Image (cartoon, rainbow, N blue to C red; front, side, top):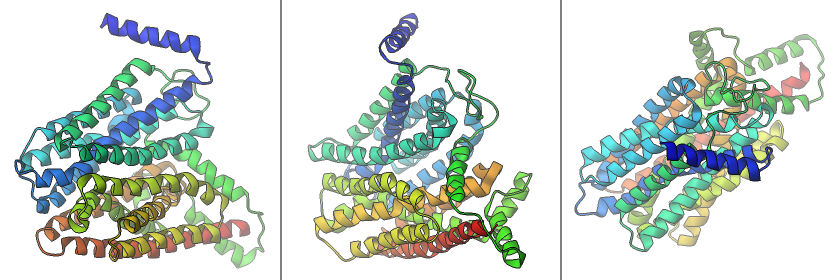
Length: 480
């Protein structure tokens, strides 16, 4: 223990001696992003390993049982997310992220030593339940190193790290499969990576931070204040972005009934006036735009669940190897990463009808890509369609819906986000269970693609309706 403390003290001394105070927070934020990337790979590894697991004669995991395995993992994720907001408020975010990395990696390694469906179900459920706290822990930790006015950019970097993590992880793990590495070793490799990053956080990350999660200028080395969830942390920066867009409109109006109607519309689109959680939930579930957001989120999340089956689909339906299938899967996150980076900037530039057309156009692009994937067999065409699918899916999922939840939810924004995520993960769980049934019969992947195409059309309709309401809201800001 004394040698460990000595090592940490030496590292901190070297950091103080060679790195300027302005640069140190950037190093710590980069460390958080890499640690979160490592956590992402504890999830990516299953989708890459599944073709090898189902074809391994020593493993009792038929393809028809994969859907149930994924559904059980989604159930663990849902339960874990519900617990995260309560538990992590009371824990230092550094140690919370370390626990997530060790727990998710440890259960993954345990999963790799088993051979039965029951063992896989139990260990994957536990791995996903622990994994669910990763975003909350990482977002809280990165915000402890970020002043309040720039937290939105830091959270964007963390989301970008997630997309890059999926792309790099799927590509690297797929490459290992191509050179003959076993699927079991893939689990151990990702677990080791998570363990190394946990150790790096222990050694290199201070236990105290310069900014408070409770807001304000931040008394030095104060983790801060009252209960705060990841959504709460980003609320102020999200509101700031919305207000920036809103202030850009010239305020005018003609008074009378038109102005009164405009004021009523703006009031409905702004933060709930509810003072209790029950009243807030009632307000949310009786607001048409919230309901459109929930359905749109369900459609988009089910579309994303395609990535869990993409490797198996590529191997079984297209006849490619497991390694090539992993490269196809990586193309989705490659498209998503580029889209999140560029699309967020475009979204801020657009207003009103421009935003509506931009987001609706992207969901139409995703729907067209699903249609193309049902018709083509060329690897080049498939990779292109998957890249564009990732691009068309990512911006509608990551940008307008969370921004709206922050604005509409107000002090209950975490509750609103939780409602949306519960429905979204529930829809993904239903899809996973259905896939388990479909893969037992003929044309299982055909049914999968047809369902995803229907969901993508639903995303176009409900995201289009949602963004039309956003346009009306912004237009009425001019009249108030």
